[in-house]
Image (cartoon, rainbow, N blue to C red):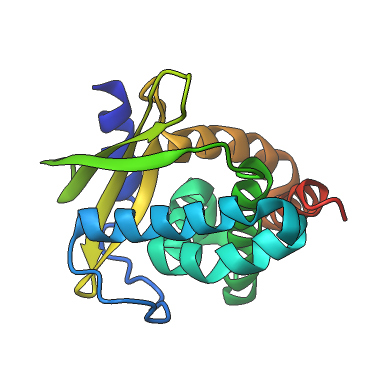
Amino acid sequence: MNTFRNLAQSLCLVFTVLALAPAALGAETGPSQIVTAFHEGLLSVMKQAKTLGPKGRYEKLAPRIEHSFNLALMAQVSASSFWRKATKEQEKKLIAAFSHLSISTYASQFDGYSGQSFVTQSEKPGPQNTVLVKTQILTPGSSPVDITYVTRKIKDQWRILDVLLDSGISELAVRRSEYRRILKSGGINGLIDTLNTKADQLLGQ
C-alpha cells in the first residue's frame, strides 16, 4: 500500500503532463499488450546477447523501450519539484540522460539467455487511473520472479510508467529518492551528468 501511495503522489505532480509521442512499432491496444510486446523484444535481445554485446543490445533495445515506456514522464516524476526549476534545454537533456540510463540498465542486466520466458498473468486497476499488469519471469531450475508494470493511457496510448519488482518496490520511487540527493547538491545539471556517466559505465565506455 505504501508503494501505491508513493506512486500516486508522484503521478499527481505531473497529472496534466502530456507525453512525448513515441514512434509506432506495433498495434498494441491495451496494458497487457504493451507489456507483452516489450517482453518479446527483450527476450529476442537476450537470445542474441553474446553476439550483440552491450552496445548492440543497447541499439536493439532502445526503440522498444522508448516505445513501451513513457520515459519523458518518468524523468519528470523522478526529478520531483526540481523539474519546475529546469530550463527547456535542461528538460530535454534530463529526459535524454534518463532514457540513456534506462536503456543501458536493461542492456547490462539482460546479457544472456538460459531458457527464460515471460508470462503476462493479469491486470487490475491501480492509483491515478493506472492499470497494474502482473507478470513473471520463469527460469528453468529457479523460482519465478514477480514483476508488476504500472501502465497508464496518455494521448490514447498505453505506456509503462513504473516497474514493481518481486518485493513490491517501486523503481520510480527508488529513483526519486536517489536523484533527490544528487539534485540537492548538484542541481539539474549535476543529475544529467551523473545519469550519463552511469549509463556509459554500464556500457563499458
